[in-house]
Image (cartoon, rainbow, N blue to C red; front, side, top):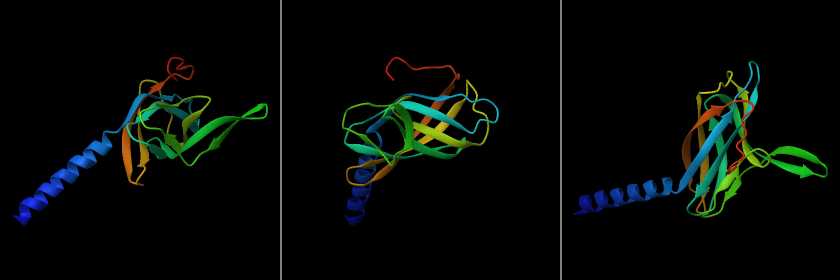
Length: 151
């Protein structure tokens, strides 16, 4: 009887963790292409969480370092700064786009070329403090690409 109970509990816990993972979705991801020897680029996407959460980290296979950033006006000057996290209100998409919140990829290990996909891992923390990783395959777009619609 105890074995059945533990088996049931384990199965139930597995289902719960699967449902937590499914609560964060990413759409329209892309990374800006680079020229040879360029050491940084940006990644952009739309992130949505079913429950209140916070985007607290990012990693990318092509970068030695990846950070969450924000572009904001400082008087008459647009400035970029690193942020520790980005709130994801329940059910509301958050755009990571040029001119606002976005992902910066630094210390690039190689040139990022149009047509490739970049593996990005987002770390999201829920209201209870539990973290989950969300894997994203972001296509590389040309240097001149601009995602006007929706971003």
